[in-house]
Length: 531
Image (cartoon, one colour):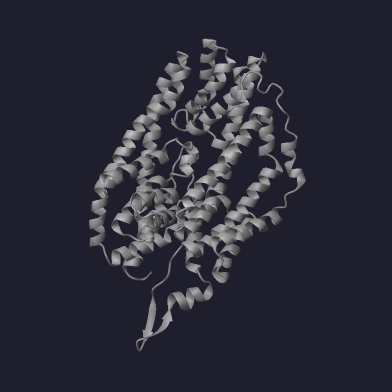
């Protein structure tokens, strides 16, 4: 790997962890995914097809990993970046690359904690500028200052790791040719069970459980692919859930805000919303979470509603810089409500500060619960599964198509809820969240998700016993073919996945489960008991 290649990969790795160009959530769900990063790394290293395949393989284990409430169980971006780069340089197969990527993802999660911690210190400077009424500096403290430091640090250590580590990996691969690399491939074949089990912890309930086993049996006996299974279970799920015209009442009964665009313009509203989507987590920290991001988004609104009154601007900045944490899309709805309230306040309505505080405190929890579920638990895995399958077949256009489709849905929904929040208020948001439509949508998502998760086991999880008995140099018993495949094809991957699922549900650490799984599968691979 040349210095220029290492630098380019390091820059893209940083972009995946930042807010530009697609926003905090947009970048995390696209550029930061191994599916997309593997493709980018492959292009830079001159092998986009293999880079896409390796990135898609690594991505499987991260299907059920979500970032919510300031936690990051593992850094998929670092795993995809380093795992793909080292696999291409060392000539590793995709399963061995996955085994190599896992420790990288764990290291990335430690860096996330460090970042969340040191960014808390920037809050003091933000408060100082707020006291001075420096609304023009909110974008500086929220984005330019912390990400200037973050860019230098992340690009530097990613470059060093890639440039100097690639030669080490090459020599190491040459030394480990044979049983050890075969064992790493066995390990990588089992690890996708963790990602599928993580998905199940969020959707494996109610009648959806039946569809998990139907999905598994459909691939075991009918050879059904994951993508056909997704569309079949989507159609079946719609019939089972049974949507009706009454489910849309929550939208029909929304009242329009009569003061809309009397003080602010639609351009002001969209300007602030774009700031929210881009920078809501660029100064994410343990003290205020998205608080500084929210006040940065409110600046275009406050500039109009305060009418140039510096004290009113200071009061507004203080009010909207308090602790805040919610989903990105549904958080836009809360931003819309606050923008409408600020506008009504500027027109003479008696709206105390406590009303803003109560509204944000009351809505951010429900919006996070529904929004994180729909975006990270439903949308992200569903769209990922489709394009991972295509990428595994060498379709280099799949990561780009995934990025476009995810962002179109994500920002389309975000814009819808921005306007609902601005034009109808917080009460309408509560009605929408509590409506039959949302409950049925989640039920449908669980059915489809469980069906696809079952189908994924046979397509993505690999575990085959290599134990045979001979008599007169003839095979008289093959443990895999004569027992497990004779009972149910793919039975061992199913049992492993369900075992991981129940271990997680009982409170066992995912990290511990992964370590145990890696150690056991590696030993079985070294001994030649599993292929």
